[in-house]
Figure 1 (spheres, one colour):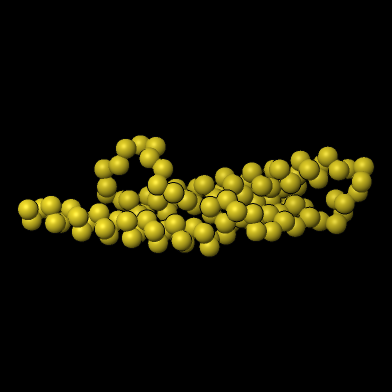
Figure 2 (cartoon, rainbow, N blue to C red; figure 1 turned 90 degrees about the vertical axis):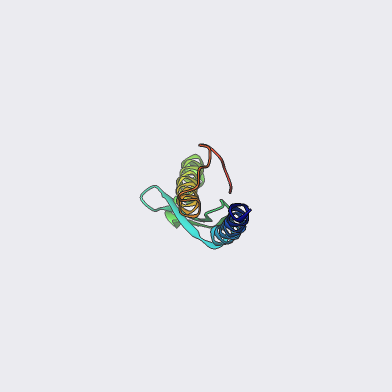
Length: 106
């Protein structure tokens, strides 16, 4: 019975750690860029886009497709970084726990 109580306490502590990590990821921002920084985006680690910055030299009507491609590349760059940060935080929270591979807690 004593072991069961210990397991329950560990489970409660892990739930709180996961909740705290999720809240942290909502506020943690990462940057993505493309075109040598001519297009930059800021997203939360959960993937919510917070801002987009475009160098004025790209605002040429005939080069609309280039701007669109750079915007997609910058967003993908930020998304990749956000996923990496999320995985790192999850690894910190669940360190030492026997969780199955691929389990997505965020």
